[in-house]
Image (cartoon, rainbow, N blue to C red):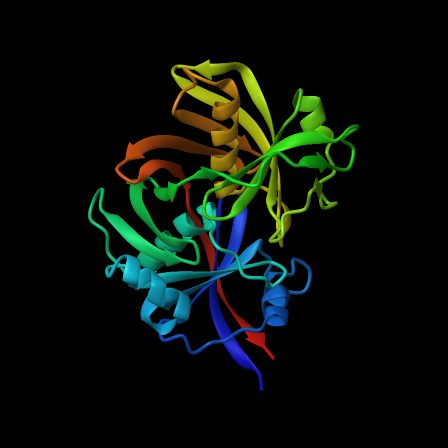
Length: 294
């Protein structure tokens, strides 16, 4: 039996999503249906699909409520291939704007809203002019330094494993020509391969690296389950953390990350539970529609 899915298309610096509201958790899309919705030729098209559902309607959401009873909404995020994902930095900003646009939440100036995710509760606030900031929590080095091979990269390079709620491997390249020459239509090969896979970021520092107290880098990414995207919020965060780690003592705690779809900001701050990393940037809603699904 066919049914109509009312959706909104949104994006953060070109990282685009299909969002829909299902407060009671009644709509259970299959991985095949999700992949069909995200297909850029035969569906709406998107790097992922996000369902807005009340946390108390999901098993994963119960863990979010246990962490923070105010985390009423859960960002149920799925990659373009229909696989679930723990977190999405651009997605959670767009998700928050969607909740506001749909009248599901109201935020006062500077107020943080807790959002449930499979990586735990994350907090988001509106900065104004369509920009939002997400606190992605405590980060950690994870996964060692695997070798990374990519199409048109003449030799394998060491990467740095970083976890910001989902897994990343960051690779430093020599210059813009190397970065621009990559063919990320092909999945980068990691040796050893992480059991759960990883997003792979390729970064080049700007010249100069630090300007007006902020670090500057360029990044391209191949996202696990989605392929190359115009932007990856958690990937931008992981890239800034990796370059700061490589730069050593005295490296700044604020970064500007240029991605193919625009620019996002990253900053680090110390909290009682460890160092948090925050991502800021635009969140845009493009259009609404209705899709008939089998």
